[in-house]
Image (cartoon, rainbow, N blue to C red; front, side):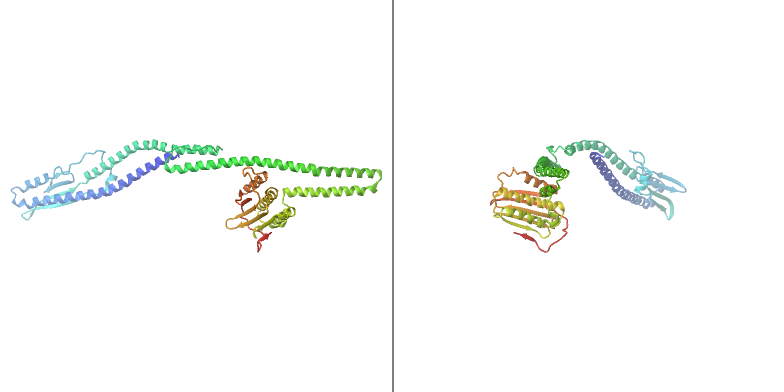
Length: 454
Protein backbone atom coordinates (compact mmCIF):
# COMPACT_ATOMS: atom_id res chain seq x y z
CA UNK A 1 0.00 0.00 0.00
CA UNK A 2 1.43 3.45 -0.90
CA UNK A 3 2.58 5.65 1.96
CA UNK A 4 -0.05 8.27 1.18
CA UNK A 5 -2.90 5.77 1.59
CA UNK A 6 -1.33 4.44 4.77
CA UNK A 7 -1.30 7.93 6.24
CA UNK A 8 -4.93 8.47 5.18
CA UNK A 9 -5.88 5.18 6.83
CA UNK A 10 -4.11 6.31 10.01
CA UNK A 11 -6.01 9.62 9.96
CA UNK A 12 -9.35 7.80 9.49
CA UNK A 13 -8.44 5.36 12.26
CA UNK A 14 -7.60 8.28 14.55
CA UNK A 15 -10.95 9.94 13.77
CA UNK A 16 -12.87 6.72 14.38
CA UNK A 17 -10.99 6.10 17.61
CA UNK A 18 -11.76 9.64 18.78
CA UNK A 19 -15.40 9.14 17.87
CA UNK A 20 -15.58 5.83 19.74
CA UNK A 21 -13.91 7.24 22.86
CA UNK A 22 -16.10 10.34 22.70
CA UNK A 23 -19.21 8.16 22.29
CA UNK A 24 -18.31 6.03 25.31
CA UNK A 25 -17.67 9.13 27.41
CA UNK A 26 -20.95 10.68 26.23
CA UNK A 27 -22.91 7.56 27.05
CA UNK A 28 -21.46 7.42 30.56
CA UNK A 29 -22.24 11.08 31.18
CA UNK A 30 -25.64 10.75 29.50
CA UNK A 31 -26.67 7.86 31.72
CA UNK A 32 -25.73 9.82 34.83
CA UNK A 33 -27.37 12.99 33.55
CA UNK A 34 -30.66 11.27 32.61
CA UNK A 35 -30.75 9.53 35.98
CA UNK A 36 -30.21 12.82 37.84
CA UNK A 37 -32.81 14.58 35.70
CA UNK A 38 -35.41 11.89 36.44
CA UNK A 39 -34.71 11.95 40.16
CA UNK A 40 -35.01 15.74 40.28
CA UNK A 41 -38.30 15.71 38.36
CA UNK A 42 -39.64 12.99 40.64
CA UNK A 43 -38.73 14.90 43.80
CA UNK A 44 -40.30 18.11 42.52
CA UNK A 45 -43.49 16.27 41.56
CA UNK A 46 -43.70 14.56 44.97
CA UNK A 47 -43.23 17.87 46.72
CA UNK A 48 -45.93 19.48 44.60
CA UNK A 49 -48.41 16.64 45.26
CA UNK A 50 -47.71 16.68 49.00
CA UNK A 51 -48.28 20.42 49.16
CA UNK A 52 -51.66 20.13 47.44
CA UNK A 53 -52.72 17.09 49.48
CA UNK A 54 -51.87 18.88 52.74
CA UNK A 55 -54.38 21.64 51.85
CA UNK A 56 -57.28 19.38 50.83
CA UNK A 57 -58.76 19.55 54.35
CA UNK A 58 -59.59 23.22 53.78
CA UNK A 59 -60.92 22.69 50.24
CA UNK A 60 -64.64 22.94 49.43
CA UNK A 61 -64.23 20.45 46.54
CA UNK A 62 -61.28 18.08 47.10
CA UNK A 63 -61.97 16.09 43.90
CA UNK A 64 -61.81 19.24 41.82
CA UNK A 65 -58.53 20.25 43.46
CA UNK A 66 -57.06 16.81 42.78
CA UNK A 67 -58.08 17.08 39.12
CA UNK A 68 -56.41 20.48 38.92
CA UNK A 69 -53.34 18.95 40.57
CA UNK A 70 -53.01 16.41 37.78
CA UNK A 71 -53.58 19.17 35.22
CA UNK A 72 -50.57 21.05 36.60
CA UNK A 73 -48.30 18.42 35.02
CA UNK A 74 -49.55 19.00 31.47
CA UNK A 75 -46.58 19.92 29.25
CA UNK A 76 -44.07 18.19 31.53
CA UNK A 77 -41.35 16.35 29.55
CA UNK A 78 -40.29 13.78 32.12
CA UNK A 79 -43.33 12.59 34.09
CA UNK A 80 -46.57 10.74 33.58
CA UNK A 81 -49.03 11.64 36.42
CA UNK A 82 -52.33 9.86 36.97
CA UNK A 83 -55.09 10.02 39.59
CA UNK A 84 -56.93 6.81 40.51
CA UNK A 85 -60.29 6.71 42.30
CA UNK A 86 -62.68 3.79 42.58
CA UNK A 87 -61.17 2.03 39.57
CA UNK A 88 -61.34 5.18 37.41
CA UNK A 89 -58.18 6.97 36.25
CA UNK A 90 -57.30 10.42 35.05
CA UNK A 91 -53.86 10.61 33.42
CA UNK A 92 -51.52 13.27 32.04
CA UNK A 93 -48.79 12.01 29.67
CA UNK A 94 -45.52 13.86 29.07
CA UNK A 95 -44.94 15.91 25.93
CA UNK A 96 -42.53 14.06 23.63
CA UNK A 97 -39.84 15.93 21.71
CA UNK A 98 -39.48 16.03 17.94
CA UNK A 99 -37.50 13.15 16.46
CA UNK A 100 -34.80 14.77 14.35
CA UNK A 101 -33.06 11.53 13.37
CA UNK A 102 -35.93 9.11 13.88
CA UNK A 103 -36.78 7.00 16.88
CA UNK A 104 -34.25 5.90 19.43
CA UNK A 105 -33.08 2.34 18.74
CA UNK A 106 -33.74 -0.14 21.55
CA UNK A 107 -30.04 -0.99 21.77
CA UNK A 108 -29.23 2.68 22.50
CA UNK A 109 -31.89 2.75 25.26
CA UNK A 110 -30.26 -0.32 26.78
CA UNK A 111 -26.83 1.33 26.58
CA UNK A 112 -28.09 4.41 28.48
CA UNK A 113 -29.61 2.04 31.02
CA UNK A 114 -32.13 4.32 32.80
CA UNK A 115 -35.44 2.54 33.51
CA UNK A 116 -38.74 4.30 34.39
CA UNK A 117 -39.43 4.70 38.13
CA UNK A 118 -42.90 4.90 39.78
CA UNK A 119 -44.00 6.61 43.02
CA UNK A 120 -47.51 6.32 44.52
CA UNK A 121 -48.77 9.08 46.82
CA UNK A 122 -52.01 8.11 48.67
CA UNK A 123 -54.54 10.94 49.36
CA UNK A 124 -56.28 10.77 52.74
CA UNK A 125 -59.22 12.96 53.81
CA UNK A 126 -60.56 12.84 57.36
CA UNK A 127 -58.69 9.60 57.97
CA UNK A 128 -60.18 7.76 55.02
CA UNK A 129 -58.53 7.12 51.61
CA UNK A 130 -59.77 9.42 48.93
CA UNK A 131 -57.56 8.64 45.95
CA UNK A 132 -53.96 7.84 44.86
CA UNK A 133 -51.63 10.02 42.77
CA UNK A 134 -49.28 7.87 40.64
CA UNK A 135 -46.06 9.59 39.43
CA UNK A 136 -43.99 7.72 36.79
CA UNK A 137 -40.74 8.97 35.30
CA UNK A 138 -40.40 8.88 31.50
CA UNK A 139 -36.69 9.17 30.39
CA UNK A 140 -37.62 8.95 26.72
CA UNK A 141 -37.17 12.66 26.01
CA UNK A 142 -33.76 12.81 27.70
CA UNK A 143 -32.59 9.67 25.90
CA UNK A 144 -33.87 11.10 22.62
CA UNK A 145 -31.93 14.29 23.29
CA UNK A 146 -28.73 12.28 23.84
CA UNK A 147 -29.43 10.25 20.69
CA UNK A 148 -29.91 13.43 18.64
CA UNK A 149 -26.65 14.89 19.95
CA UNK A 150 -24.71 11.70 19.23
CA UNK A 151 -26.17 11.40 15.74
CA UNK A 152 -25.50 15.07 15.01
CA UNK A 153 -21.89 14.62 16.12
CA UNK A 154 -21.54 11.61 13.85
CA UNK A 155 -23.02 13.47 10.89
CA UNK A 156 -20.73 16.42 11.55
CA UNK A 157 -17.74 14.08 11.73
CA UNK A 158 -18.70 12.42 8.45
CA UNK A 159 -19.05 15.82 6.76
CA UNK A 160 -15.76 16.98 8.30
CA UNK A 161 -14.01 13.78 7.16
CA UNK A 162 -15.52 14.05 3.69
CA UNK A 163 -14.03 17.54 3.32
CA UNK A 164 -10.80 17.03 5.26
CA UNK A 165 -9.61 13.65 3.97
CA UNK A 166 -9.42 14.70 0.28
CA UNK A 167 -7.64 17.87 1.38
CA UNK A 168 -5.21 15.81 3.48
CA UNK A 169 -4.72 13.49 0.50
CA UNK A 170 -3.74 16.42 -1.72
CA UNK A 171 -1.47 17.98 0.91
CA UNK A 172 0.21 14.64 1.60
CA UNK A 173 0.89 14.24 -2.10
CA UNK A 174 2.59 17.62 -2.13
CA UNK A 175 4.51 16.86 1.09
CA UNK A 176 5.66 13.45 -0.18
CA UNK A 177 6.78 14.75 -3.56
CA UNK A 178 10.41 15.27 -2.37
CA UNK A 179 10.47 11.65 -1.16
CA UNK A 180 9.36 10.54 -4.62
CA UNK A 181 12.20 12.56 -6.13
CA UNK A 182 14.61 10.97 -3.67
CA UNK A 183 13.30 7.54 -4.65
CA UNK A 184 13.76 8.35 -8.34
CA UNK A 185 17.30 9.57 -7.64
CA UNK A 186 18.08 6.37 -5.74
CA UNK A 187 16.73 4.33 -8.65
CA UNK A 188 19.07 6.15 -11.03
CA UNK A 189 21.82 5.69 -8.48
CA UNK A 190 21.13 1.96 -8.38
CA UNK A 191 21.51 1.86 -12.17
CA UNK A 192 25.04 3.21 -11.87
CA UNK A 193 24.46 6.95 -12.32
CA UNK A 194 26.74 8.14 -9.50
CA UNK A 195 26.61 11.74 -10.76
CA UNK A 196 22.98 12.15 -9.64
CA UNK A 197 22.39 14.71 -6.86
CA UNK A 198 19.28 15.92 -5.03
CA UNK A 199 19.16 19.71 -4.64
CA UNK A 200 15.50 20.30 -3.73
CA UNK A 201 14.46 22.33 -0.72
CA UNK A 202 13.19 19.83 1.81
CA UNK A 203 11.68 19.69 5.25
CA UNK A 204 14.20 19.62 8.12
CA UNK A 205 13.45 15.92 8.67
CA UNK A 206 14.52 15.13 5.09
CA UNK A 207 17.54 17.44 4.86
CA UNK A 208 19.82 14.91 6.57
CA UNK A 209 18.58 12.17 4.27
CA UNK A 210 19.25 14.34 1.21
CA UNK A 211 22.72 15.36 2.43
CA UNK A 212 23.59 11.76 3.31
CA UNK A 213 22.47 10.60 -0.13
CA UNK A 214 24.50 13.28 -1.89
CA UNK A 215 27.55 12.49 0.23
CA UNK A 216 27.18 8.77 -0.47
CA UNK A 217 26.80 9.43 -4.20
CA UNK A 218 29.89 11.64 -4.18
CA UNK A 219 31.94 9.05 -2.31
CA UNK A 220 30.83 6.24 -4.62
CA UNK A 221 31.50 8.37 -7.69
CA UNK A 222 35.03 8.95 -6.42
CA UNK A 223 35.41 5.25 -5.60
CA UNK A 224 34.11 4.27 -9.02
CA UNK A 225 36.58 6.60 -10.70
CA UNK A 226 39.40 5.19 -8.55
CA UNK A 227 38.35 1.65 -9.41
CA UNK A 228 38.37 2.46 -13.10
CA UNK A 229 41.79 4.08 -12.80
CA UNK A 230 43.16 1.19 -10.76
CA UNK A 231 41.71 -1.31 -13.20
CA UNK A 232 43.45 0.44 -16.06
CA UNK A 233 46.69 0.53 -14.09
CA UNK A 234 46.26 -3.13 -13.19
CA UNK A 235 45.87 -4.04 -16.84
CA UNK A 236 48.98 -2.01 -17.62
CA UNK A 237 50.89 -3.76 -14.82
CA UNK A 238 49.73 -7.13 -16.05
CA UNK A 239 50.86 -6.33 -19.57
CA UNK A 240 54.22 -5.08 -18.26
CA UNK A 241 54.65 -8.23 -16.18
CA UNK A 242 53.71 -10.44 -19.10
CA UNK A 243 56.09 -8.64 -21.41
CA UNK A 244 58.88 -8.98 -18.83
CA UNK A 245 58.21 -12.71 -18.40
CA UNK A 246 58.04 -13.12 -22.18
CA UNK A 247 61.35 -11.26 -22.53
CA UNK A 248 63.00 -13.45 -19.90
CA UNK A 249 61.66 -16.58 -21.56
CA UNK A 250 62.92 -15.37 -24.92
CA UNK A 251 66.32 -14.08 -23.75
CA UNK A 252 67.17 -16.60 -21.04
CA UNK A 253 65.19 -19.78 -21.62
CA UNK A 254 64.94 -19.88 -25.41
CA UNK A 255 68.67 -19.92 -26.25
CA UNK A 256 69.46 -22.67 -23.76
CA UNK A 257 66.55 -24.80 -24.95
CA UNK A 258 67.86 -24.32 -28.47
CA UNK A 259 71.37 -25.28 -27.29
CA UNK A 260 70.03 -28.43 -25.61
CA UNK A 261 68.22 -29.31 -28.83
CA UNK A 262 71.46 -28.84 -30.81
CA UNK A 263 73.44 -30.99 -28.34
CA UNK A 264 70.84 -33.76 -28.56
CA UNK A 265 70.98 -33.62 -32.38
CA UNK A 266 74.78 -33.83 -32.28
CA UNK A 267 74.63 -36.80 -29.91
CA UNK A 268 72.26 -38.61 -32.30
CA UNK A 269 74.57 -37.85 -35.19
CA UNK A 270 77.67 -39.10 -33.29
CA UNK A 271 75.86 -42.32 -32.40
CA UNK A 272 75.03 -42.84 -36.07
CA UNK A 273 78.67 -42.24 -37.01
CA UNK A 274 79.93 -44.55 -34.27
CA UNK A 275 81.75 -41.79 -32.38
CA UNK A 276 80.36 -42.59 -28.93
CA UNK A 277 83.57 -41.41 -27.22
CA UNK A 278 82.57 -37.80 -27.91
CA UNK A 279 79.11 -38.12 -26.26
CA UNK A 280 80.15 -37.15 -22.65
CA UNK A 281 81.17 -33.69 -23.79
CA UNK A 282 77.73 -32.96 -25.22
CA UNK A 283 76.04 -34.54 -22.19
CA UNK A 284 78.01 -32.17 -19.96
CA UNK A 285 76.86 -29.24 -22.09
CA UNK A 286 73.23 -30.33 -21.69
CA UNK A 287 73.66 -30.61 -17.90
CA UNK A 288 75.15 -27.11 -17.68
CA UNK A 289 72.32 -25.71 -19.80
CA UNK A 290 69.75 -27.47 -17.57
CA UNK A 291 71.35 -26.01 -14.41
CA UNK A 292 71.24 -22.55 -15.95
CA UNK A 293 67.57 -23.04 -16.87
CA UNK A 294 66.82 -24.11 -13.29
CA UNK A 295 68.42 -20.94 -11.93
CA UNK A 296 66.48 -18.77 -14.37
CA UNK A 297 63.16 -20.50 -13.63
CA UNK A 298 63.81 -20.19 -9.88
CA UNK A 299 64.45 -16.49 -10.29
CA UNK A 300 61.25 -16.03 -12.28
CA UNK A 301 59.26 -17.97 -9.68
CA UNK A 302 60.78 -15.78 -6.99
CA UNK A 303 59.24 -12.76 -8.68
CA UNK A 304 55.87 -14.51 -9.05
CA UNK A 305 55.78 -16.16 -5.61
CA UNK A 306 57.89 -15.39 -2.51
CA UNK A 307 60.24 -18.34 -2.11
CA UNK A 308 60.52 -19.45 1.51
CA UNK A 309 57.55 -17.48 2.87
CA UNK A 310 55.37 -20.53 3.46
CA UNK A 311 58.29 -22.74 4.46
CA UNK A 312 60.24 -20.38 6.73
CA UNK A 313 57.61 -17.92 7.96
CA UNK A 314 57.17 -14.18 7.60
CA UNK A 315 59.99 -13.12 9.94
CA UNK A 316 62.60 -15.29 8.19
CA UNK A 317 61.40 -14.21 4.75
CA UNK A 318 61.68 -10.53 5.73
CA UNK A 319 65.12 -11.22 7.19
CA UNK A 320 66.24 -12.71 3.88
CA UNK A 321 64.95 -9.68 2.00
CA UNK A 322 66.95 -7.41 4.29
CA UNK A 323 70.03 -9.62 3.90
CA UNK A 324 69.64 -9.56 0.12
CA UNK A 325 69.89 -5.75 0.03
CA UNK A 326 72.47 -5.58 2.82
CA UNK A 327 74.93 -7.56 0.67
CA UNK A 328 74.46 -5.13 -2.19
CA UNK A 329 74.22 -1.90 -0.15
CA UNK A 330 76.28 -2.50 3.01
CA UNK A 331 76.56 1.23 3.71
CA UNK A 332 72.82 1.42 4.56
CA UNK A 333 71.67 0.56 8.09
CA UNK A 334 68.64 -1.77 8.23
CA UNK A 335 66.38 -2.13 11.28
CA UNK A 336 63.60 -4.72 11.09
CA UNK A 337 61.11 -5.60 13.82
CA UNK A 338 58.49 -8.36 13.39
CA UNK A 339 55.94 -8.90 16.16
CA UNK A 340 55.95 -12.22 17.99
CA UNK A 341 52.38 -13.09 16.85
CA UNK A 342 52.78 -12.16 13.18
CA UNK A 343 53.78 -15.64 12.01
CA UNK A 344 51.78 -18.09 9.88
CA UNK A 345 48.70 -15.97 9.36
CA UNK A 346 46.34 -16.05 6.39
CA UNK A 347 48.34 -16.67 3.20
CA UNK A 348 47.04 -13.54 1.48
CA UNK A 349 47.98 -11.40 4.46
CA UNK A 350 51.50 -12.91 4.66
CA UNK A 351 52.06 -12.44 0.94
CA UNK A 352 50.75 -8.86 1.01
CA UNK A 353 53.03 -7.96 3.94
CA UNK A 354 56.01 -9.56 2.18
CA UNK A 355 55.31 -7.71 -1.09
CA UNK A 356 54.96 -4.38 0.73
CA UNK A 357 58.34 -4.81 2.42
CA UNK A 358 59.90 -6.06 -0.83
CA UNK A 359 58.65 -3.10 -2.87
CA UNK A 360 59.53 -0.53 -0.19
CA UNK A 361 63.10 -1.85 0.17
CA UNK A 362 63.55 -1.86 -3.58
CA UNK A 363 62.27 1.70 -3.95
CA UNK A 364 64.32 3.01 -1.03
CA UNK A 365 67.71 1.63 -2.14
CA UNK A 366 67.13 2.41 -5.81
CA UNK A 367 65.66 5.91 -5.58
CA UNK A 368 65.91 7.32 -2.06
CA UNK A 369 69.66 7.18 -1.28
CA UNK A 370 68.93 6.56 2.42
CA UNK A 371 71.29 6.00 5.31
CA UNK A 372 68.69 4.18 7.41
CA UNK A 373 65.70 1.97 6.54
CA UNK A 374 63.28 0.85 9.28
CA UNK A 375 60.75 -1.94 9.03
CA UNK A 376 58.04 -2.55 11.65
CA UNK A 377 55.40 -5.30 11.51
CA UNK A 378 52.99 -5.51 14.46
CA UNK A 379 49.61 -7.03 15.19
CA UNK A 380 46.71 -5.59 17.22
CA UNK A 381 44.55 -8.51 18.34
CA UNK A 382 41.79 -6.35 19.84
CA UNK A 383 41.22 -4.47 16.61
CA UNK A 384 42.00 -7.50 14.43
CA UNK A 385 44.56 -5.59 12.35
CA UNK A 386 48.17 -5.89 11.28
CA UNK A 387 50.26 -2.74 10.74
CA UNK A 388 53.23 -2.62 8.36
CA UNK A 389 55.43 0.49 8.42
CA UNK A 390 58.50 0.98 6.24
CA UNK A 391 60.38 4.28 6.25
CA UNK A 392 63.73 5.76 5.26
CA UNK A 393 65.65 9.00 5.69
CA UNK A 394 66.37 9.45 1.99
CA UNK A 395 65.28 12.06 -0.51
CA UNK A 396 61.60 11.12 -0.57
CA UNK A 397 59.32 11.45 -3.60
CA UNK A 398 59.35 14.73 -5.50
CA UNK A 399 55.86 14.35 -6.95
CA UNK A 400 53.50 12.26 -4.79
CA UNK A 401 50.89 12.29 -7.56
CA UNK A 402 53.24 10.47 -9.95
CA UNK A 403 53.81 7.20 -8.10
CA UNK A 404 55.26 4.38 -10.17
CA UNK A 405 53.72 1.05 -11.01
CA UNK A 406 55.31 -0.60 -7.97
CA UNK A 407 53.53 1.66 -5.48
CA UNK A 408 50.29 1.44 -7.48
CA UNK A 409 50.51 -2.34 -7.42
CA UNK A 410 51.15 -2.21 -3.67
CA UNK A 411 48.02 -0.10 -3.20
CA UNK A 412 45.98 -2.56 -5.24
CA UNK A 413 47.20 -5.50 -3.13
CA UNK A 414 46.25 -3.72 0.09
CA UNK A 415 42.81 -2.69 -1.13
CA UNK A 416 42.16 -6.20 -2.47
CA UNK A 417 42.10 -7.59 1.10
CA UNK A 418 40.23 -4.62 2.56
CA UNK A 419 43.23 -2.73 3.97
CA UNK A 420 44.36 0.90 3.99
CA UNK A 421 47.62 2.32 2.62
CA UNK A 422 49.21 5.71 3.35
CA UNK A 423 52.20 6.99 1.34
CA UNK A 424 53.81 10.19 2.62
CA UNK A 425 57.02 12.20 2.53
CA UNK A 426 58.52 12.64 5.99
CA UNK A 427 58.81 16.13 7.38
CA UNK A 428 62.51 15.70 8.17
CA UNK A 429 63.27 13.96 4.89
CA UNK A 430 62.63 10.53 3.56
CA UNK A 431 59.61 8.49 2.58
CA UNK A 432 57.20 6.45 4.71
CA UNK A 433 54.73 3.70 3.83
CA UNK A 434 52.07 2.64 6.35
CA UNK A 435 49.65 -0.22 5.63
CA UNK A 436 46.84 -1.48 7.88
CA UNK A 437 45.56 -4.93 6.98
CA UNK A 438 42.59 -6.87 8.44
CA UNK A 439 43.88 -9.91 10.32
CA UNK A 440 41.37 -11.87 12.41
CA UNK A 441 42.87 -15.34 12.02
CA UNK A 442 44.53 -16.97 15.00
CA UNK A 443 48.25 -17.57 14.70
CA UNK A 444 49.35 -21.14 14.19
CA UNK A 445 52.73 -21.03 15.90
CA UNK A 446 52.84 -18.39 18.67
CA UNK A 447 56.24 -17.36 19.92
CA UNK A 448 57.36 -16.17 23.31
CA UNK A 449 59.45 -13.28 22.13
CA UNK A 450 59.34 -10.67 19.42
CA UNK A 451 61.66 -11.13 16.48
CA UNK A 452 63.90 -8.08 16.25
CA UNK A 453 66.63 -7.87 13.69
CA UNK A 454 69.12 -5.20 12.91
